[in-house]
Length: 356
Ligand code: NAD
Ligand code: TYD
Image (tube, rainbow, N blue to C red; front, side, top):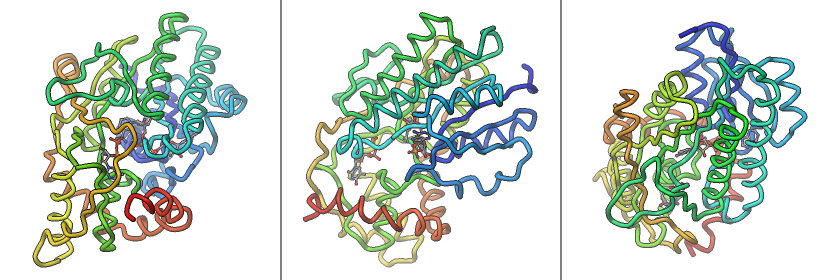
């Protein structure tokens, strides 16, 4: 493998997963030039990359993937050879409020990037367009079964519909124009730097402030949780060794009912805060109005990734959750900054009726 002359455009690198991908690639491959394109929406934050911002192989470009001209211009200017595409509107609840923002960024933004790659990569060798996607494109499971790579797409939320559409476009460009592409569909990530609109950091933040802990519906919905660094290691493997035109499912073999997870977070967070008896925050739990169209269960068959590329999830859940809670407790300023200003407005709007 040639470790030099890769000029990798990573989109959404200031977000949760993107910042972990950028940090990992910048550190592990000093011979690569890493360009982080991010519009810095509410979910993007350059503080997530403070520790690597001065690395000589790291470059930040503030820009929006909805801006076709800008995408074309930066391709001309920097001559990217590879793309790892993560930029997206990523939150299901927000997609229910405003679906078109998800179409514009997730669908149109992806098509703009595909078009630019097609235009600039005359000789297709030595290039790759990697689309980072979600297991939510497969829809919802009952009590048994797992999503496989050939499970038919059946997205239910505007978010998952937009990710499904973007996956379809990536595949269409592979089949129609021979653009070298790869897609991975991953389950729910958790870890440091996740914006506190998603379940785990939202619950940690609310426990800290002794605010109600909103559990949608009866709390029986099941998600498969994966530590973000395990996702990043999978992305690294797929980026370097995945086969063009293929899809890889990524999941943690780690299914939890939401209510059990929230209770676990109460125990760990109370303990780390020194609140006695640990677990007392469970009394803050409120079962609230369910999310519209709430998918009941996600579970991933990750056997292809394991057998073909030798990947394994490494972080056990108890350790990963403790690490995550500790990170939020030790990074009070980060949490304070991202929950000031517009966040309050968002929170009040989302939860006013639910918690009433
Ligand atoms: P995130 O919301 O934390 O970050 C998204 C990033 O994209 C932000 O930095 C934001 O500023 C940027 N962005 C948004 N719109 C943009 C635009 N129009 N132009 C340029 N940048 C823009 O999201 P995340 O949780 O880190 O997810 C990253 C990717 O991984 C997404 O594509 C998501 O669908 C996928 N994914 C997420 C999970 C998960 O559990 N979070 C699981 C599987 C797949
Ligand atoms: P979330 O983190 O939004 O991820 P996704 O919907 O993409 O899986 O939600 C995870 C689960 O937690 C999901 O079943 C919805 C539920 N949930 C709550 O019960 N309360 C909350 O406040 C949030 C944000 C989510």
